[in-house]
Length: 482
Image 1 (cartoon, rainbow, N blue to C red):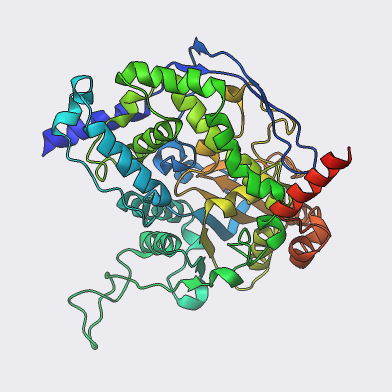
Image 2: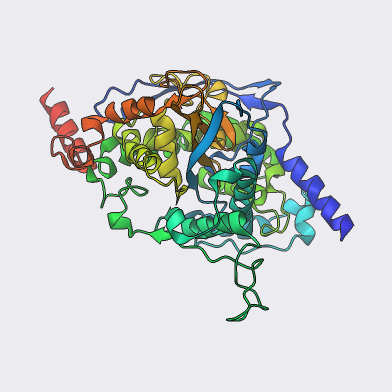
């Protein structure tokens, strides 16, 4: 009904509007190459300020629609630059929250047993939802890729020829949400162009029906291209101390005095009773999920329960874990993204030109973005986290995509590459021009990694394979000696 649709729109606008919010200061010790070495020296007092930055608090659970650009608005000198080839690296779309779901369900059960509806009347008539723990794609995730594909085809029609399996190199990981994302994207490219519909027969085929498309999938233990983060593919990365310790950063913040001050006490004031740190995190998940999928969440309003100081700190704690797992402090972790850049250059050298599309995960796309030198903060400190450049909500939303387009300069006969992140052009600092990259620029980035992207050297060299347990054993021995 139109009234229900309008109510839904108003609800969604409330969820994503920019408002005043709390900020704070977070200081950690320098990463010195001997492991994580992170110590929380101080998390200073919070101040209520007005922000001109429209801030979203959902870290890697941010819906694509909140942060994307529109590739249809991309511009270049069309009299000089001719699009030749496209390479797409995409994260899966919005999904169920997987392992977080049971704790979300437990918190809902707990909240519904309280008298919280006196403060939040919407709970009285709210029909509780089942939070699925399977991690599969949500309908919103399907739409994210479907609509992205349509926009890209609209702006680069010559790069997407009529479908034939040999013309498209499409690959997803073994995890089902990535292949479903790939299928959604391909449907967006070729909707209404296939032979399959109810009216088709063997002698009279439709040309406006469904087009089935082929998607290549590698098993996890053999997928060094899109699942290089797995122990089966790179034990040096998976077993390094910094990788294993990254998750603990969030727990460290949850045990800090500032978490009590900025999260737990304000929540208790809002709700009339205290929550544990784990419950506060689950409440943040409930809030994120209702923004990701309002319909699946039955238009809940858990976000209204969380003060901005809590939203900021909960969001930052998740960003920090990802930062140490996949980005600048974890040199091996982000240098492994070179395998994607190698795949990119290989695809650009193929003749005839064939679109290449890869569908993977946060752990795939963030290292590549880092390797390009984008969103780089001071590597030795995280002071003033409210002003940080590294925000996962903007770097790695659900359905995020990093797209490389090869152009031919018809004047100089030079090949250049323009790069688009979430449909907005970006300019890696390592590139020789502020307007584009060259093939040589990308090759130099690859060559800057260990062994010029020698994966065997990176992942199986015994001198760098240091397990978490071995790291602790050596540290304890050193301390005993000193």
